[in-house]
Amino acid sequence: MTHGLSERIVYRFHLDDTVEEIALEFDAKTFDLLNIPPGKAPAWAKLDFQKCPHCPLDAKTTPDCPFAKALAGFVECFANLHSYEEADIEVVARGRTVLARKPLQRGIASLIGLIGATSGCPHLAFFRPMARFHLPFADDDETLYRVLSMYLLGCSLTGATDTMDSSMALVSLSEVIEAVNIVNTETAERLRWGFPKDAVVNAIVILDCFVLLLPTAIEEDLQNLRADFAAAAVWPKS
Image 1: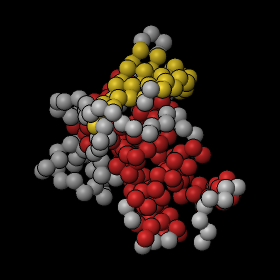
Image 2: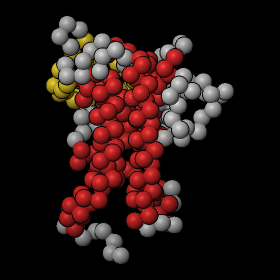
Image 3: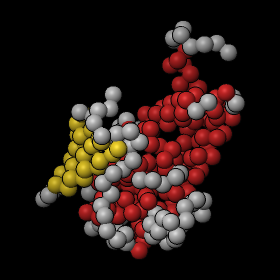
Image 4: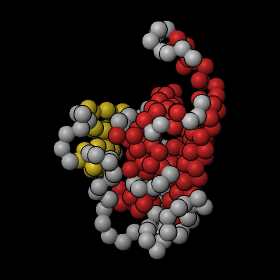
């Protein structure tokens, strides 16, 4: 259960000569990212700069891209670092600490995914339930399981399963994933303007690689997942 008004997730990147700590604060009820640094966003974070073609936001009311502005506030410390540099990365969330030695791009990718889902981007909000139960450094199989579980639970909670069968649900999921891919692609172009080195850009490329592979992974791995559930007799029969 969630207690208090906010939740906190901390990333610490232990580099050769320094420690970069990024602490994210979230509304405990909505899991909106609360502590986006104030101030003027850089030019590459303006909504109309490299704007996603399917973005529903209007620059008159939302002058900055929510995702880009949040990234600008939290990942500028990586601007002059290379993606292949390794670091001991510590993540503290929900009373647990995860520690792993990874290339910077892997740790930043995990951080960017968390920021994107909670930044206010309408398309990345799909991942917000996963962000609440953040799992740093999840591999492809773990992420596939979490995405499918989250999506199908969401369909059930919103009543969507009352009007669609499982095949329709997966088609709808593919459309969501396609929209997320567009956001990642356009954001990577923004970041190339803002970061001279490749650590941050490559991090979002890593995120997008999984997004691109997800529809194929669903088709290929769904049968493997069936076997895991077949052992239990509790599932209702169709």
